[in-house]
Length: 435
Image (cartoon, rainbow, N blue to C red; front, side, top):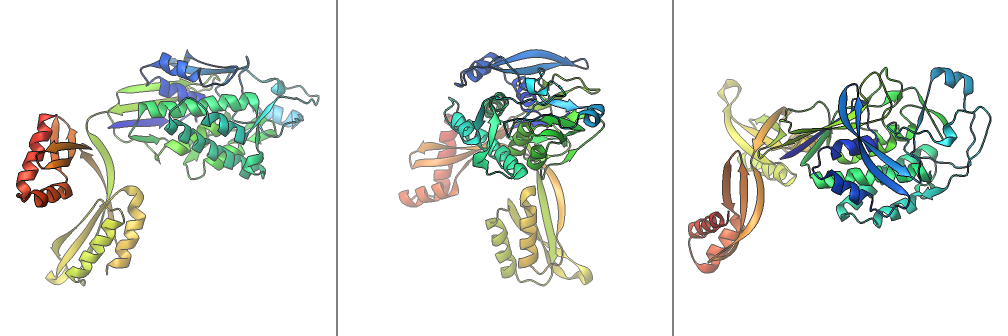
């Protein structure tokens, strides 16, 4: 079981996430070589050591035609004295990661109005670039899904159809590298679960092509709907649209870190200095055991027939319950009754609670959250004298168990006219020979 927990106490930017994940991956040079072979002209990706508040980590530099994209946080004095004094020919910029060090020319703080003619790239052109990259298909699929979140947010915020969105070229190529790099590292690491802390978004204001915007920037706030976020005393943009979209796509649950035995820690650094260490930390745990959480739902039934309880059981199982069982109990006045228990994944809880209320006579369903340790299972097919039999192989904590699939054993026993047990034992024997 491979678990990944992302600590976003200082927000999340694409390059910081990539640096944190890269510290977990054993072949750093191989990854950088692949990133520099994406077919993006004028783009160079490098990883350099960095330190914040005495903590060592890594920083990802993305150089586009000799430039790095950056955002400019706005001080209170500047907000009141300058206002929005810039005019831009282009309409959309993209993902000003707070972790980049060099300021772009259009953020030089001059008071007089001026215009720029930087080149732009459309949302559709970005998608086409990703589709043509020499990376696994799953990486392309994930990257396009991340960009769909960004595109939908930009479209909603600016009231423009997503097909008409254009991004500033330097910032967009920088963000493409961050998105594809993170998606590639998630693919290479292959975590079984990805969880994260609530996201610190920062506070204050940030300057972009549209002028001075509040933090979190509108696109970032739109992407993070449904995700637990918070602000604080640190002034600046801590979470960017790219960082927000990557978290939204990959993280299955936000909250405190569950108990885990950590094997490695990756630390992705930003460049700006804050009172707290400007970094994203990635905690990696890998073990043979598989631990997860399930919900145990139960209710007491004293006025249902066994047939009706059986019907409810089948409905719950067909709706995704992990297991359903009944237990004889005694209720008030020693009435013989039945306790119906349903085990399910936490995400399925609401659906199954409703089914229990609808298809049984109970007026309430109890819930208990349970942590469980399970063996990791996989399937393989073995050849026996009775034909191929699928085997479920479960292992962990030095334990290995083999279980032939019932349907295969039954079909083989009927076909060859032998006892079920003979086929079962033959399948286990052949599996043990090949372990």
